[in-house]
Image (cartoon, rainbow, N blue to C red; front, side):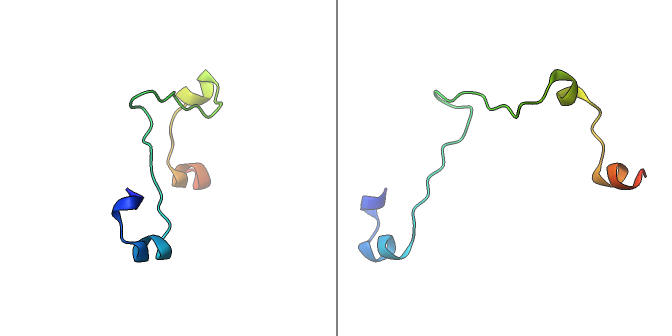
Length: 52
């Protein structure tokens, strides 16, 4: 893609690419939570902070 852009653009901006997860040969991402932590009741920020 970079070769398709004018040199003035390439000199002024950084090009950033993105590779979405879950397609082609990507592997799952985990955040190290236990099964109990993943399955606990979800509560809102207000409920967590103020018990409302």
